[in-house]
Length: 253
Image (cartoon, rainbow, N blue to C red):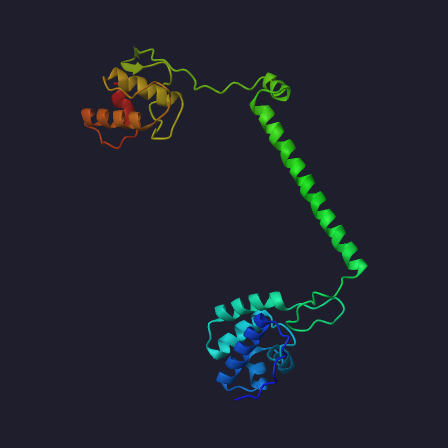
């Protein structure tokens, strides 16, 4: 068991709790300071400072110690976070572990002026941010209520949405084949996702055959696919829901 130097009476209790815990872990490990340094990667002098409450150990050092001692680092890190609050020093004295500023020690005029300047700067920054937010909110509200700015923007004509090309079914027969006036293809392969006059042609011919594909919109969707399958079944073709050469031949027949 190591014979530790007595900790200062004025040591902050939060710091004392951390240092006592570190000393116990070191004792239970059975390692010397040098062995602990070799295992953790932190020098022996560093561990003498940490265990003597002369400096606050970094979080990585505590993790390394916990790993060596088989300890959960979570508790050590929590103790360190609490101890860090007590690891301060008075303005006139060098930093000492855990020593709190003496309440009767007056602050120097320079520190008081610096504190006032920092507070004033913070207030100015908060006011500037608040003003910017207020202006933004007013602009948004004005836009929603139809302000002159909104009116000017709304006066600019917007491009008209592109409408789907109109298709119609002008059924007529030529050379023994039926056509609807949109396309004369007999080979184009069509399936779900295709669009255009070839699809509109197939839709018109499906309707001529007594099977509704939905609207004549030139879009090969689920309704058109269902109509194609019904037509293929009716015509004795392979039912795959796609319009190929054999389906075209039957549609135009």
